[in-house]
Length: 229
Image (cartoon, rainbow, N blue to C red; front, top):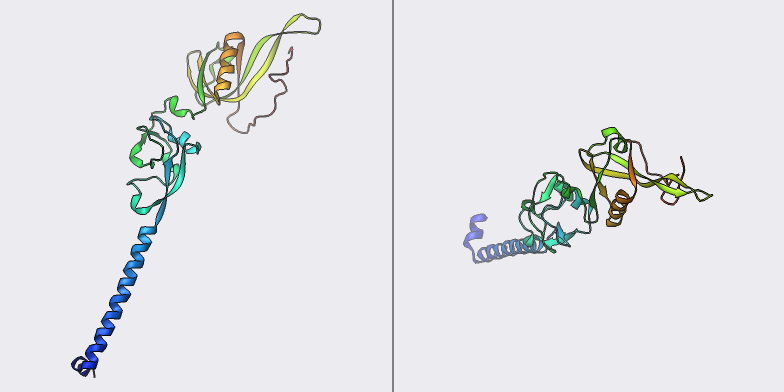
């Protein structure tokens, strides 16, 4: 039967039709695969603002205003494109990254843990000089969390001057310690300015906070309240 199929005219035509159908199916499969590849997109991280050389990957991962996750056609995704911000941990930008640029692995390298790399765009490093009692007897180290108090003078009800203490800020992070110089991380330029003013016009005392189990609460003695204790 099969040999007759190959030798008859009808058989030849049938085989031709079958071959054409198989070819058409293969073409449809190829075109569908090609179309899917062309239309496929990948979610990658793209800079929305200039990311300066030396920017910490840890800070960058928390500052979502510097980048966004964007759908990029698969054919346009750069080699080493970063899809997950967690891969930036412990790294720094090795070069300036312009807005609208894809973040790629070769743009980041090992961190050197400089103070600058531990600051987000709005944070500032402020250095204050303190004596041993004001710095908890030298027990404050890089990584400590402290409350910032200021000692100044105020007037009592009868108009006499008296010493007063004010709790200026809670839970400030210590970036570094060198001798009597304490480098604090201010969370805004305004906070940095307040610390600088206090350092120049009052006496600053630091109170060391626990490393765990502590929460910032409204102070009983605040910038707007004074006490003679």
